[in-house]
Image 1 (cartoon, helix red, strand yellow):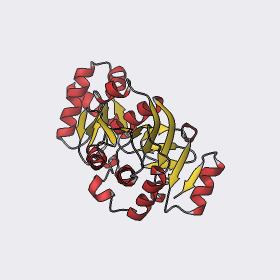
Image 2 (image 1 turned 180 degrees about the vertical axis):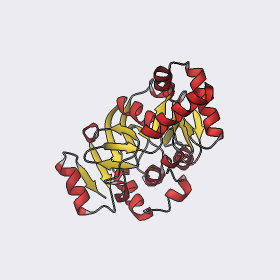
Image 3 (image 1 turned 60 degrees about the vertical axis):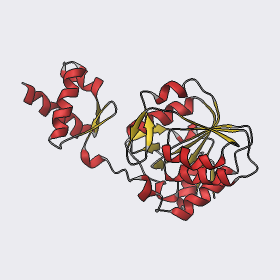
Image 4 (image 1 turned 120 degrees about the vertical axis):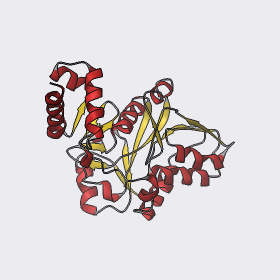
Amino acid sequence: MSEARRNELLQLVSARGFVRVSDASDELGVSEVTIRADLTELESRGTVVRVHGGAMLPGAIREPSLESAREQQSLAKRAIGEHVAGLVRSGDSVFLDVGSTALAVANALVERRDLHDLVVVTNGLSIALALEAALPRFTVIVTGGTLRPLQHSLVNPYASQLIDSLRFDLAIIGCNGVDVHAGVTNVNLPETEVKRQVMRQSGRRVLIADGSKLGVTELGVVGPLSDFEMLITAGATAEAIASLRSAGLRVENA
């Protein structure tokens, strides 16, 4: 019976790409503890990959490391970083997301010698280390949470406790995909959850994505285009920018 249930569970993951533990528990009529044990067994066989809250197919994970990602579209990311840094004012409270483009924003903020009394909250360890050079002009707060590899990010359950207790003037959000129909999406589901939570706590939401992300759709839904004040991009085609603008998104080309 256990093997039959695991086969059913694997079929659910295969059909949907991602299945939550809670959903699988309801559909298969067993406890969440049992589902987690089954997923652990399936992961040991290499047929699924466990992620926060559920599991997905191994081939669905296409997330590069921060170190490799920062080498891609590096000039575009630098231009985005400088453009976004120009939106920040002394005294602001800012959430700065994880990722190589966000790292370019962090470096550009450090170079803004006129900025002071800036509070930056981040769930990226690499982001926090880059901002350290601006102390004591900046106050840098790291969310805490469970450490993820590749992006060196901190995710729930503990990141949410700090985020829920704060209110940000500006949230600078990265992603893996921006599409007219699918909206803003991300490869990594635990990070997607943090992004959505931050957006609920923010007065302004600015999206950052280089041109390679435009027209792309990934698994985790961050939100519709209407959730964002604007997109800052660089290295994008005129057609991709025009398409997003026609959908009502303000796009600024860095």
